[in-house]
Image 1 (cartoon, rainbow, N blue to C red):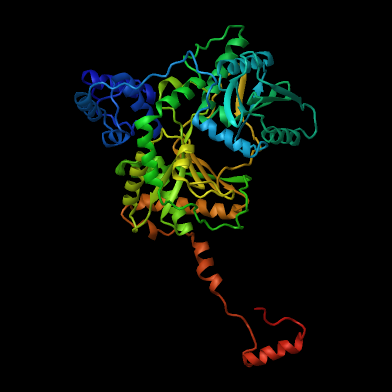
Image 2 (image 1 turned 180 degrees about the vertical axis):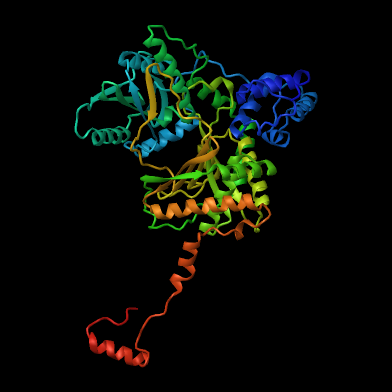
Amino acid sequence: YEPPQGEIETALARLWAELLGLERVGRHDHFFELGGHSLLAVRLLSRLSQALGVELPLRTLFAKPVLADLAASIVEELSRTGPQHLPAMVGGAREAPLVLSFAQQRLWFLAQLDETSTTYHMPLAWRLRGVLDRSAWQRSLDRVLARHEALRSIFVASQGKPRVEVLPPDAGLPVIEHDLQGMPDADEALLDLCQEEARTPFALARGPLIRGRLIRLSDEEHVFLLTQHHIVSDGWSLGVLGRELSQLYRAFEAGQDDPLPPLAIQYPDYAAWQRRWLSGERLSNQAQYWRNTLSGAPARLALPTDRPRPAQQSFAGASVPVVIDADLTRGLRRLSRQHGTTLFMTVLAAWAAVLSRLSGQDDIVIGVPTANRGRREIEELIGFFVNTLALRLDLSGEPSVAELLERTRRTALAAQEHQDLPFEQVVEIVQPPRRLDHTPVFQVMLAWQNNAAPAFDLPGLSVEAAADGFDQVKFDLELNLGEHGEAIAGTLGYATALFDQATIERQRGYLLALLRAMVADARQAVGRIGLLPAAERAYLLEELNRTAAAYPSEKCIHELFEAQVAKAPEAVAVVC
C-alpha cells in the first residue's frame, strides 16, 4: 500500500473508496481487482465529471485501471480541455403536461397493444417471520408511495398522445389482506394467491401502479406480495425500496417520525431533463453509432427449436438453474484479468459462442440491460431508468478465445459509451423487420445482476424470499447471472412455446463446457472447442447411425414390393 499523492489522486481514491465500499485505496490499486465492474465504472466516470470536471471515455478506465495511471490521464485531459461539467438535474417548476421518459413511452405503447398483458409486471414475494406490526408496515408502504412520484404516476392519453399525471401523496398503497391460518390446504391457497396477484393486470390510466397483498399464515408468519408495473420501477429500484421500507418500519414501529431525508428531484424531473439533454449533436452522434453498428444485422437468431415458432409471440416461460462453481469462477476471474475484460464480458463471449454454434450464424446480437444510473442525483430514486443495449458480436474468421475476448471487450465498451440513447429510439433508427412472432433486433438476452436483492432489516422479523409463481419471459432465451460469493449463479429462462426443458439443460451444459475450455487454453479456436458431453456425442454419432436392420435379404426389391401388394392391395403405394 502506498497512499495517493496530489489532489487528483486523493480525490480519485476518495471516489473509489465510496463506490467500492472500502476504507482506503492506494495509488497502486487496480479498480477491477478491488471489485469494480462495468456499472461501477460508469458511475465513477459520472462522478469524475461532477467532482473534477473531466469527461473520460469508459475505455480509458479499462486501459488505465490502476489509480495512479488513471489520475495521470485525468491530469492530461484537464490540461488539454479544462474543467467540463455536465449540466445538473434540478427539481422545481415543470412544464405541463408532464412528459414520459423515453423508456416509459415504449412501455406505454406496448401496453396499448395488449391492455391485459402482465409481461411487464415485477412481482415480489417475501415471507415475514416474527411479530409484524401491521400498522407500521402499512404506514411504511404509504410513505414510500408518497415519497416517490414515479410510484404515483399514471399515464393518460388524449388523441393518442400520452402524458403523466401524479396521484396525490395521501393516495395510500392498496393492500388486500388474506387470512389462511388454520386452513388445511394453506400452501396450495398461497400459491394460487401468488399466481392471481402476479397475473392481475394494471390499468395504466388509473393507478396506482404498485399494489400489495398481506397473507396471514399464523400469528407470527406472513407472506407479503408486492407487484409493480415496470413503467414505474426497475431492478435498481428494488434495492432502494428495501432500504427505505426497513428504515421507515424501524422508525414507525418505535413510535418515531419519518427518518428519510427529502428527495432533491423526482422521476418527472429526470424525464424532462432526459429529453432536453439527449438532443442536438449528442443525439446525432449516438444515433449514428447505433445506425452504423446494427446496419445489416440479422433480423432473427435462427436457433433450432423443439416446436415451430407461433404466429404471435408467446410470453409463457420457465427456467433452469445455472451454477458456475467457485473453482471455475476463479479461473474465469483469472482469464478476465489477463485479457482486460470483466466477468460479464467473458461470460458474454462464451454465451455468444454457444449461440453461434447452435444457430450456425457468426453474426450474433444479444440484448444486455444496463442500469442507466450513472448520475448521482438519481441513485436514490425509484423509477424506470434501465436501458437495453444491443451488442453485436462478430465470430467470423475462426477467432481464438483471446481474440473473441478482445472483440467482446471492444463491443461492450463502445456500446456502454453510447448507452444514453434509449433502446426504443435505436429500434426506430435501425428499422428492423417487424413481426409479431419475435422481438425486434434481438431475441436472446444476458442480464448481469450487479444489484443485490432487496435487503431488509426489520426489528423482530426475519425476511426471506417466497415463491411467486411467475412464469413469463420477454425473449426466446434469457440468461440471468450474477456473483454470489465465490461462485456465479442464476437462471436460464426460456419460452416454453419454443423449447423443452431438456433442450435448455443441454444448452446450459454447452455453456459450462465452453467456459471450462476457455479457462484451460485461451489460444485455441473457439469454433473447435468440443461442447458435447460423452453420452450425447455417442448418441449423435453412433446410436443414430446404427441403421442395420433385419430384412429378407434373399429376395430382390421388386419381389418385396409384390409381396406387399399381395398383403395390402388397397393401401396407397406412392403419393406425388
